Amino acid sequence: PRQLNDSTVLMALDMGDGAYWGMEYTLPKGESYVVRLRIVQNAMADIVQSNARNLGIDWQQDLHRQEKGKMFEERNSGIYYKFAGGSVEHLSESKNDSEERQSKVRWIAFKNQFFSTVMIADRPFNTADFSSEVIKGQDYLKSMTAAAVVNDYDWNSGNPVNFHLFIGPNLYPLLSHLDKEVEAGEDLKMTKLIPLGWSLFRWINTGVIIPVFTFLGKFISNYGIIILLLTIFIKLVLFPLTYKSYKSQAKMRVLAPDIKAINDKYPGAENAMIRQQKTMALYSKAGASPMSGCLPMLLQMPILFAMFSFFPSCIELRGQSFLWAHDLSAPDAIISWSGNIPFITEYFGNHISLFCLLMTATNIIYTYINMQNQPSTMPGMKWMMYLMPLFFLVFFNNYAAGLSYYYFLSLLITIIQTYAFRYIIKEEDVRKAMAEASKKPRKKSGFMARLEEMQRQQQAMLREQQKQQQRGGKR
Image 1 (cartoon, rainbow, N blue to C red):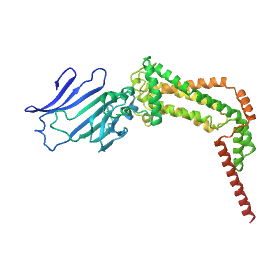
Image 2 (image 1 turned 120 degrees about the vertical axis):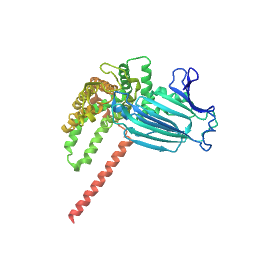
Image 3 (image 1 turned 135 degrees about the vertical axis):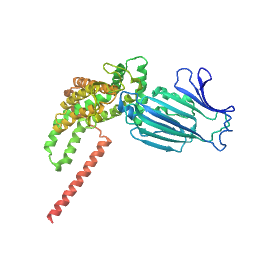
């Protein structure tokens, strides 16, 4: 190695008689994680065979464990690569895998949960072979190799090939601006190194959650407070949908005695069509719909799934403590034990996370409140509803404390909203409003008109079948 100046080091192989082949590393100026790598050589054409026109690059690394949260470090570590002008692909992160790519590759990344080393080629690799092998142990995650080839290599050139090396954190704002620093002539899509969910969930994270989270981080250093403010922000955005959902549920509770009366008046499978018609007529007259309460809740699901992907990928939470949690990116274990317990260690782990426990308790309370609003629910279904929070306890026990903390806060705010809506939305007022609405002529929606037409056709078919059966009986 030879230091050329304060920022540049040359590592060269001396071939004698002034010939050498080397790699020149230049550290960036200012705050940057990108290192410039130049292949430099002199008089190499006299040493290398004239027909050798390829440069092969072999890269091997045993990926070291760095995080306290074992599950997500294993799940989010592996080999990623991007085709020149194309998409980003990766090898399996859960099992041994290998790929042979004959297409041009722009960059290759050896990625850990929160950090990556990426080799970006100024001139794309012509071919690349990748392999990843899972290491069963406490110190290492995977053994990864990449063998790439650059064609048309000129041994007469003093600087035939250049690369950029990104060695840094998987931070979305940082990765999204690397295109300007590297100037590769295309969208590098380096943010794909951060697993933020499927397209819809990823858009929510990149377009809403990350900008708000980053903005709050500029003014607040405590990430527990930031998660609290982010949760309140999301709840405020979803408030119109939540309010509409609760109001629709109030209407359905008011109509429950009338629906029961219809079911009692027209029992049996032979009256199913009549029951459906009467029920739909009741909904139409009262201005209610059984789907109106479900739809707003379904529209909130993408945000819940987006947050599920966001928190385990959020490097800002790494090493950040809040209350009893020493690292919001890892489980907040308050009780731990050693040894391998069959089934329990594999799925639940050797610890109990307190935020996960609080989330489960809050979820049980919320389930109880909902059950009070649905007295007609079958006993077996009630037990199933109470078992779901216990399932989440097992599922989330190994997840990041920040995620469990967020769900705990979200459920707590939802419970507060439920009691507030009960105080604001009186069933007596809902009953009066529905009575007033029933007096006004209502224009049928296209959906209701089509539904009633389908019901008429089905009823006509049923009558025709009954007539045919009666004729067959007379014969």
